[in-house]
Amino acid sequence: MGGNRSGFSVEKVIVCWSGGKDSALAFHELSKSHRYEVVSLLTTVTADYDRISMHGVRCSLLRQQARNMGMPLCEISISRICSNEEYEAKMAAALTGFKKDGVSSVVFGDIFLEDLRCYREENLARLGMKAIFPIWRRDTTELARSLVPSGFQAITACVDTRKLDKSFAGRLIDEQFLNDLPEGVDPCGENGEYHSFVFDGPIFKSKILFSTGEKVLRDSFFCFCDLVPVGGGVVTNYLLIQS
Image (cartoon, rainbow, N blue to C red):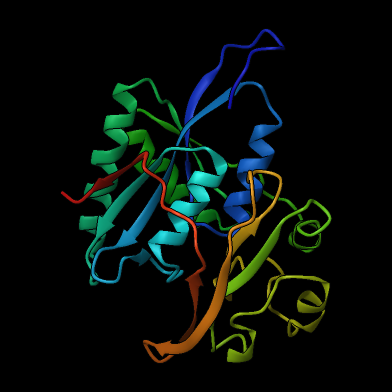
């Protein structure tokens, strides 16, 4: 992805990729500009479980996403009980490597959490890099309702049962889903109400096939719906960072 049709110099970036709808929408928004070249996706995974951290989606599905996007994937492997120090050290090591290869910025799918944005910008500034937020300050109701018309399909992989009933885990994110959200729940789940997995859309060469498995409650509050891959291979162009 890249180009220079408008006379701008092309900036190399990486996309902080959660596998969910917001990072997919951010990637899609960025792809409309010819000012950027995405050189890799970057995802934090939990080594003990071989799953995306927080979201609980299997790494095999993450790798299928990268393959179907035609993108290299960098996996940062963290421990099950990961401290901020461990997380920040491993992120810094990975980002420093990308910077040496000419990457200047990291793309995030954050929408309105100011403290999180400041945290990301401060950490990147220490490395001499900057952050890009393609969907920052977008209306979350409009953004969520634009998902299906834009050609994306996503499913909830995890819900916080303090904010949403466990029945919302494993549901397709469509108009009915959004209509059923209780009052006070952000339509995009920006406050952590739910996390999602995108399995089809304009950024993919083909749909990712999976079935829904069992639902598991962890840490007393978080209900995960297991997504089980159906067929397919794994992406071969990815980097796993463990130390």
